Image (cartoon, rainbow, N blue to C red; front, side, top):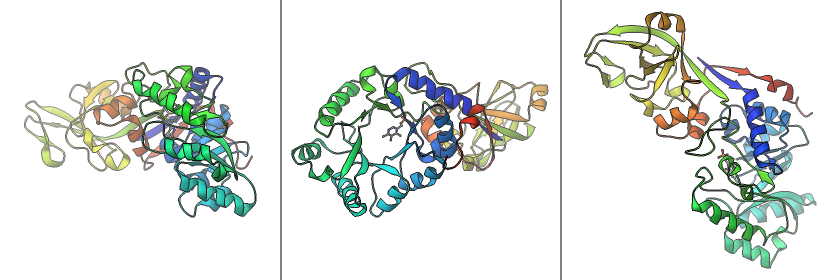
Length: 369
Ligand SMILES: *Cc1c(COP(=O)(O)O)cnc(C)c1O
């Protein structure tokens, strides 16, 4: 089986977002190991496409990524400062996103210890109720700016709850709330939009847009055509196939039984590789372009598919079945599995071979360059 990552498509997607939101700048969100594809690989490719701002979720992710990033980049840590992480953030030349008064106090204390102003992003909660300073906490800072005095606020940000729903009234409400709150803080560039927000009107773009999933090729908005290029394709090796008579069960629990004779092929890919077990008896693979429904439960290392409708010569020549590719997008697979492309992508494991294609390698900077 092969997970193929097309760096050309990744770089193209960056440019599509950049064109869409210009003159706003575009960061790359590479948390969760670059949505599972490899943070250094992704960041290097995005750097080659012009990206200079990167977001991870955790300090540990920043520490791991920093050595492979050129120095003319900024690396933001979304989830704030866990107690004791100050030194690691400074060592990684990372910019923490301060989400609460305790984050601000910790980072300001670190600034006093190192004797210099430290860069920080401040997040405000504009309505998602997930991360960021509450309106009351922002008002308190507006009344007494002392907690921020030792910090260099380089970004004020918030996050949209419904950026992928272009018609949601919550978007305009969050934007208005964000602008109101940001105006109470020290003047700094602003950032509100994720992938979905990038494809809302220019009023949402601010100074810096923070796409993740769109860069990786999934649809940024529901119910709209996907303007992105697919980055990931996935093929699984066909281990064997057999003809089974009517009434024969397939897989654990024998949950798939048909009234007709069938031909069943077994793929070398399973839930331990990240193929959701919720796709048991749901969804399909494609063999030589022919749809082959998943039959029975997804196992740890294998999946059975019904290849009755695949011509015998096609099956014999195929060798592999497509799980993600030209015949079914990652969004379609995610929908079949009752999840979203984000969860599917970040869940794909590295147990099998990965193939990197595209010209992105030229853009991959060497360590510390
Ligand atoms: C994950 C994340 C993003 C990227 O979101 P996508 O929907 O993948 O574009 C942007 N901003 C924040 C705060 C995030 O947590």
